[in-house]
Length: 321
Ligand code: BDR
Ligand code: CA
Image (cartoon, rainbow, N blue to C red; front, side, top):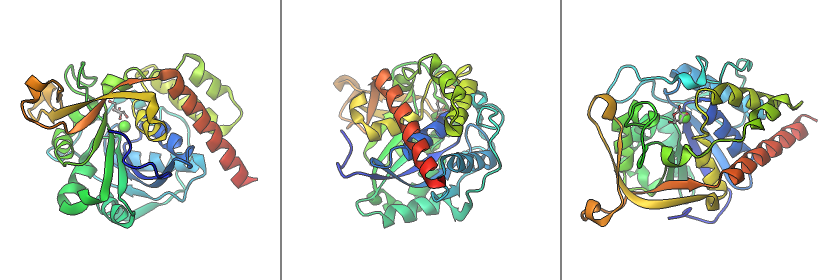
């Protein structure tokens, strides 16, 4: 399974919980306008509470000089819990303590669920949905609007750990563990899904000097990205969420296998575990419901990130000159 169309730029929505690696994913998308048309950012509680994720998304747009991208608030907690688990990897503010100003980019009035539905319907050929936080918004949008799936070209998501251990528990990856019910609704939606789990994102480790070199640069965008990455990589060295965007720009960076993935809904460490069936004897007449990413070319991923930030910095310099 590859991208559903060759037509570029691909119209996408990023559903996210920034989060340092979410922030880098947003910057990567904005630095590739020939390939990606970012129609909206929808926010969900995850790494930090919702009020912080939606403020952080807007801070990142300010930093990139892209305040025209609309940002929507979504769900403040998982489907079956009053309070979701957060992640310490991103610092208490979610952006590694980097001192970005209060956001100027406005927060839109619509709820993320309604925005996803409206934008998907307005997009000829449908939207590419990129969930890189807990899947709560996406799952509830699919339930609220049953024919929405006809307007989603593809879901390209970060979540799960199919062939190896989890990160938040020994069995489960953070995004799926925080809202396992949402993850299962998405995985059973019968929409083409590309799944970027820890199987591939654990390989996505930048060279040691990458964040330091960025932080030492004069360009404010580079400095902020370098500082965020520097704070984050001591706690989690993996560039999880940007893998989703990198695939949209250059799918040749990745290898994958078709699989049937089911989410464990029990309580405790197994909640959100992604059980992947790839062999005929395990599939037992089930059809694969996604492509599980297994390998990434890390030097090319790093080069793509550097190029994306360079392009974005020069575009925002042109705007302000
Ligand atoms: C996922 O969890 C979050 O901490 C990251 O932003 C990423 O989406 C990795 O497990
Ligand atoms: Ca995330």
